[in-house]
Amino acid sequence: MILEPCACGATDCRRCYPLSWKNEQTEFYLDLALEKAVETIISHGQYPARGRAKFDLYDFLLEHRDPSYAIEMYVASMSSNTRAFKDCIERERNTVEAMLIEHLKDSDLVAEIVAEIAAEYEEDDL
Image (tube, rainbow, N blue to C red):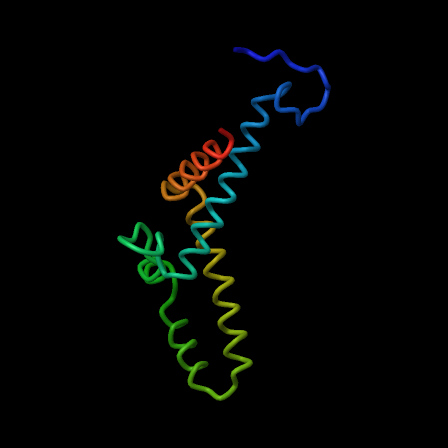
């Protein structure tokens, strides 16, 4: 069954412009998938959180980060200045998140998560 356009004139109408809606939907799924992957990796050190890792944060940082940052964090944790340690953690977390977003943006891992999210949303629509 093919639906006729409703002729409402709105460029965000799903009936009049179905292809533009699909592009928006795909971008929405990509954003969700990337956010889910990065949050899980930062929180648990791997993706998925449990089971066999498809992405390991330790290996990623070993390849893409200077190991002196680990020593800096260790020294900060040993000092009595807890405020500086909190700032150091937050700064490092933001840096690693940005690195992960850039690295995972067009990855197969995110594509798999997009497929899972799309399937969940389609089930909800039925």
